[in-house]
Length: 210
Image (cartoon, rainbow, N blue to C red; front, side):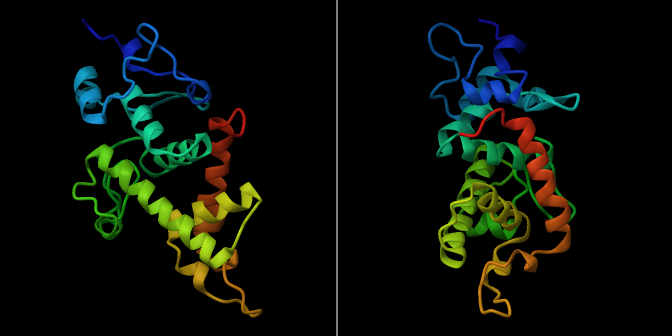
Protein backbone atom coordinates (compact mmCIF):
# COMPACT_ATOMS: atom_id res chain seq x y z
CA UNK A 1 0.00 0.00 0.00
CA UNK A 2 1.36 3.40 -0.90
CA UNK A 3 1.44 5.74 2.08
CA UNK A 4 0.58 9.29 1.13
CA UNK A 5 1.61 12.56 2.72
CA UNK A 6 -1.87 12.72 4.22
CA UNK A 7 -1.21 9.46 6.04
CA UNK A 8 2.18 10.67 7.26
CA UNK A 9 0.86 13.93 8.69
CA UNK A 10 -0.95 13.65 11.96
CA UNK A 11 -2.50 17.10 11.89
CA UNK A 12 -2.01 20.52 10.35
CA UNK A 13 -2.69 22.19 13.66
CA UNK A 14 -0.84 21.08 16.78
CA UNK A 15 -3.77 21.85 19.08
CA UNK A 16 -5.93 19.40 17.16
CA UNK A 17 -3.24 16.76 17.44
CA UNK A 18 -3.09 17.26 21.18
CA UNK A 19 -6.86 16.83 21.42
CA UNK A 20 -6.95 13.49 19.58
CA UNK A 21 -4.76 11.86 16.91
CA UNK A 22 -6.51 11.97 13.53
CA UNK A 23 -5.86 10.78 9.96
CA UNK A 24 -6.43 7.15 10.91
CA UNK A 25 -6.66 4.08 8.73
CA UNK A 26 -9.60 2.04 9.99
CA UNK A 27 -10.63 2.26 13.62
CA UNK A 28 -7.13 2.90 14.99
CA UNK A 29 -4.33 5.23 13.87
CA UNK A 30 -1.95 3.24 11.65
CA UNK A 31 1.07 4.35 13.67
CA UNK A 32 -0.38 3.18 17.01
CA UNK A 33 2.01 0.99 19.02
CA UNK A 34 4.73 1.22 16.37
CA UNK A 35 8.19 2.00 17.68
CA UNK A 36 9.75 5.07 16.10
CA UNK A 37 12.23 3.22 13.87
CA UNK A 38 9.51 0.91 12.47
CA UNK A 39 7.14 3.82 12.00
CA UNK A 40 9.75 5.87 10.17
CA UNK A 41 10.64 2.93 7.97
CA UNK A 42 6.99 2.47 7.04
CA UNK A 43 6.49 6.13 6.16
CA UNK A 44 10.00 6.81 4.84
CA UNK A 45 9.54 10.15 6.59
CA UNK A 46 13.05 10.16 8.04
CA UNK A 47 14.60 10.11 4.58
CA UNK A 48 12.17 12.75 3.34
CA UNK A 49 12.76 14.80 6.50
CA UNK A 50 9.01 15.04 7.07
CA UNK A 51 9.22 15.82 10.74
CA UNK A 52 7.36 18.87 11.95
CA UNK A 53 7.25 21.67 9.42
CA UNK A 54 6.09 25.17 10.15
CA UNK A 55 3.47 26.70 7.89
CA UNK A 56 3.21 30.37 8.64
CA UNK A 57 3.13 31.67 12.20
CA UNK A 58 0.44 29.56 13.84
CA UNK A 59 0.39 26.18 12.10
CA UNK A 60 2.69 23.23 11.77
CA UNK A 61 2.35 19.80 10.24
CA UNK A 62 3.09 17.02 12.70
CA UNK A 63 4.89 13.84 11.79
CA UNK A 64 2.79 11.02 13.20
CA UNK A 65 5.79 8.85 14.09
CA UNK A 66 7.47 11.52 16.17
CA UNK A 67 4.21 12.55 17.81
CA UNK A 68 3.45 8.94 18.70
CA UNK A 69 6.92 8.40 20.16
CA UNK A 70 6.49 11.44 22.38
CA UNK A 71 2.92 10.48 23.27
CA UNK A 72 4.01 7.02 24.46
CA UNK A 73 6.90 8.36 26.55
CA UNK A 74 5.28 11.36 28.20
CA UNK A 75 3.02 11.24 31.24
CA UNK A 76 0.18 13.53 30.14
CA UNK A 77 -0.82 16.22 27.64
CA UNK A 78 0.91 18.97 29.57
CA UNK A 79 4.14 16.94 29.53
CA UNK A 80 3.68 16.22 25.82
CA UNK A 81 3.21 19.92 25.06
CA UNK A 82 6.34 20.76 27.06
CA UNK A 83 8.57 18.54 24.89
CA UNK A 84 6.90 19.60 21.64
CA UNK A 85 7.66 23.23 22.49
CA UNK A 86 11.21 22.36 23.54
CA UNK A 87 11.78 20.60 20.19
CA UNK A 88 10.40 23.66 18.40
CA UNK A 89 12.62 26.07 20.30
CA UNK A 90 15.78 24.01 20.42
CA UNK A 91 16.07 22.49 16.93
CA UNK A 92 13.11 23.71 14.88
CA UNK A 93 12.21 19.99 14.74
CA UNK A 94 15.45 19.06 12.98
CA UNK A 95 16.82 15.75 14.38
CA UNK A 96 20.19 16.20 12.64
CA UNK A 97 21.19 19.66 13.86
CA UNK A 98 24.25 20.42 16.00
CA UNK A 99 24.25 23.60 18.08
CA UNK A 100 27.08 26.11 18.41
CA UNK A 101 27.98 24.80 21.85
CA UNK A 102 27.79 21.14 20.81
CA UNK A 103 24.10 20.54 21.55
CA UNK A 104 22.82 17.55 19.60
CA UNK A 105 19.65 16.59 17.80
CA UNK A 106 15.95 17.15 18.20
CA UNK A 107 16.00 18.30 21.83
CA UNK A 108 19.56 19.70 21.63
CA UNK A 109 21.07 17.52 24.35
CA UNK A 110 24.55 18.45 25.50
CA UNK A 111 26.96 15.50 25.07
CA UNK A 112 27.52 15.43 28.84
CA UNK A 113 23.79 15.34 29.52
CA UNK A 114 23.28 12.57 26.96
CA UNK A 115 26.03 10.52 28.61
CA UNK A 116 24.61 11.23 32.06
CA UNK A 117 21.19 9.84 31.14
CA UNK A 118 22.61 6.86 29.25
CA UNK A 119 22.03 7.94 25.64
CA UNK A 120 24.59 6.44 23.25
CA UNK A 121 23.47 8.08 20.00
CA UNK A 122 21.76 11.44 20.56
CA UNK A 123 21.36 11.88 16.79
CA UNK A 124 18.91 8.99 16.88
CA UNK A 125 15.61 10.87 17.31
CA UNK A 126 13.99 8.28 19.56
CA UNK A 127 17.03 8.14 21.85
CA UNK A 128 17.18 11.94 21.84
CA UNK A 129 13.54 12.16 22.95
CA UNK A 130 14.18 9.58 25.68
CA UNK A 131 17.24 11.53 26.84
CA UNK A 132 15.32 14.80 27.01
CA UNK A 133 12.55 13.18 29.06
CA UNK A 134 15.05 11.58 31.45
CA UNK A 135 16.75 14.96 31.81
CA UNK A 136 13.34 16.56 32.39
CA UNK A 137 12.61 13.97 35.09
CA UNK A 138 15.86 14.87 36.85
CA UNK A 139 14.81 18.53 36.72
CA UNK A 140 11.49 17.57 38.32
CA UNK A 141 13.37 15.86 41.14
CA UNK A 142 15.55 18.93 41.72
CA UNK A 143 12.49 21.16 41.75
CA UNK A 144 10.94 19.01 44.49
CA UNK A 145 14.21 19.08 46.44
CA UNK A 146 15.11 22.75 46.18
CA UNK A 147 11.78 24.46 45.48
CA UNK A 148 9.35 22.29 47.40
CA UNK A 149 5.77 21.73 46.28
CA UNK A 150 4.70 24.25 43.64
CA UNK A 151 0.98 24.34 42.98
CA UNK A 152 1.13 27.18 40.46
CA UNK A 153 1.58 25.47 37.04
CA UNK A 154 2.89 28.62 35.35
CA UNK A 155 5.61 29.03 37.99
CA UNK A 156 6.46 25.32 37.85
CA UNK A 157 7.02 25.40 34.09
CA UNK A 158 8.91 28.67 34.38
CA UNK A 159 11.37 26.91 36.68
CA UNK A 160 11.48 23.74 34.55
CA UNK A 161 11.96 25.60 31.27
CA UNK A 162 14.69 27.76 32.77
CA UNK A 163 16.44 24.66 34.08
CA UNK A 164 16.22 22.85 30.75
CA UNK A 165 18.07 25.77 29.21
CA UNK A 166 20.49 26.65 32.00
CA UNK A 167 20.81 23.54 34.15
CA UNK A 168 19.75 23.27 37.79
CA UNK A 169 22.77 24.63 39.69
CA UNK A 170 21.06 28.03 39.97
CA UNK A 171 18.34 26.37 42.08
CA UNK A 172 20.84 25.33 44.74
CA UNK A 173 22.13 28.85 45.39
CA UNK A 174 20.83 30.56 48.51
CA UNK A 175 19.58 34.12 48.47
CA UNK A 176 20.09 36.63 51.31
CA UNK A 177 17.26 34.96 53.20
CA UNK A 178 18.89 31.55 52.91
CA UNK A 179 16.27 30.27 50.47
CA UNK A 180 16.98 28.23 47.37
CA UNK A 181 15.15 28.27 44.01
CA UNK A 182 15.40 32.01 43.44
CA UNK A 183 14.70 32.74 39.77
CA UNK A 184 16.95 35.79 39.93
CA UNK A 185 19.92 33.41 39.82
CA UNK A 186 19.01 32.28 36.29
CA UNK A 187 21.16 33.67 33.46
CA UNK A 188 19.77 36.86 31.95
CA UNK A 189 19.27 35.35 28.49
CA UNK A 190 17.31 32.48 30.01
CA UNK A 191 15.13 34.80 32.07
CA UNK A 192 14.39 37.40 29.41
CA UNK A 193 14.58 35.42 26.16
CA UNK A 194 14.22 31.66 26.55
CA UNK A 195 11.43 31.48 29.14
CA UNK A 196 9.24 34.17 27.48
CA UNK A 197 9.66 32.41 24.12
CA UNK A 198 8.42 29.16 25.66
CA UNK A 199 5.25 30.78 26.95
CA UNK A 200 4.72 32.60 23.67
CA UNK A 201 4.80 29.24 21.88
CA UNK A 202 2.64 27.63 24.54
CA UNK A 203 -0.26 29.78 23.38
CA UNK A 204 0.11 28.27 19.92
CA UNK A 205 0.35 24.71 21.20
CA UNK A 206 -2.35 24.98 23.88
CA UNK A 207 -5.95 25.54 22.99
CA UNK A 208 -6.66 24.30 26.50
CA UNK A 209 -4.61 23.18 29.47
CA UNK A 210 -4.44 19.47 30.18
